[in-house]
Amino acid sequence: IELESDLRKAIERNELVLHYQPQINARQDRIIGVEALLRWKHAEKGLVPPGQFIPVAEEAGIIGEIGEWTMREACRQMKQWQSQYGWRIPVSVNLSSQQFLDDGLVEQVAEILRETELDPSYLELEITESVMMDASRSSPILNELTEMGIHLSLDDFGTGYSSLSYLRMFPIERLKIDRTFIQEITESEDDRAIVETIISMARHLKMNVIAEGVETKEQLKLLLENGCEDIQGYYFSKPLPAEELETFVQAMR
Ligand code: G
Ligand code: G
Ligand code: NA
Ligand code: MN
View 1 (cartoon, protein in one colour):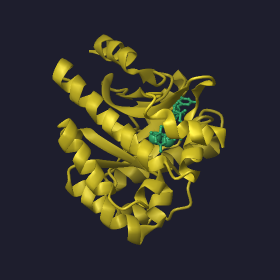
View 2 (cartoon, helix red, strand yellow):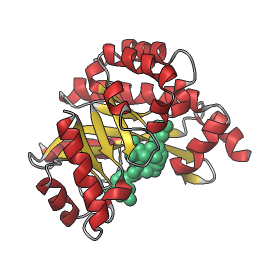
View 3 (cartoon, helix red, strand yellow):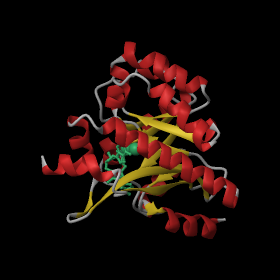
């Protein structure tokens, strides 16, 4: 309850910040995007992890407001990087499935893009399988977003309960293999089989695929051998404050 009332004030108190985790094409050693990840710098409690406060925000019905702030800030920051450094990489923003229940998500995204002057092709929205399960609601929204020129990826892929047939029904361009499958990929034959199957399926469906939570050289090697070149994980970098991401990107080029 305390967390909830504090969270309501977090935006106006400027306590929310975004960190950015690089996404790397490991074959070309090139940065292909960044994922914006929300952080809350609570005045007394210090850094509160999103795993703790996002569920609170969802239950309290304020995830919409927080999500709007996040999207605006990510777009503003990416536009600034483009103007200042000429970066040409997209930013990925996580969407809570609750943000689909509010009317006006499409208009909100359009408004933010107009306001920040970010080209829609530099925005990727990450949805989860739960969004696709409410197909009659989500389908038109996802189609409209795609028609605006925004990209869609499916986050935490493999952990939900959705049917694979949804992959054909929705304009999803990229699968993000959940890090729980990557974690033991070198020890567990089962996990390796699952990951190989996801990569192969993505290829056949002409979708992009990225592995999340890659931490070791051995994991990276296995993924490359199986044709997954796009990598997000501590092996390359943890999520970084904006300034540190600038240093990271300059060092890579
Ligand atoms: O960055 P970290 O591993 O601490 O994130 C924990 C969880 O919080 C992840 O599941 C991530 O998707 C979620 N998360 C982080 N930032 C956002 C955000 O801006 N919006 C939503 N809906 N979830 C987020
Ligand atoms: O649910 P989602 O995929 O949005 O969550 C991304 C979260 O995963 C981020 O909070 C980020 O901090 C975390 N993460 C990213 N890379 C790694 C990694 O290599 N190992 C672990 N344990 N967590 C990671
Ligand atoms: Na994500
Ligand atoms: Mn994920």
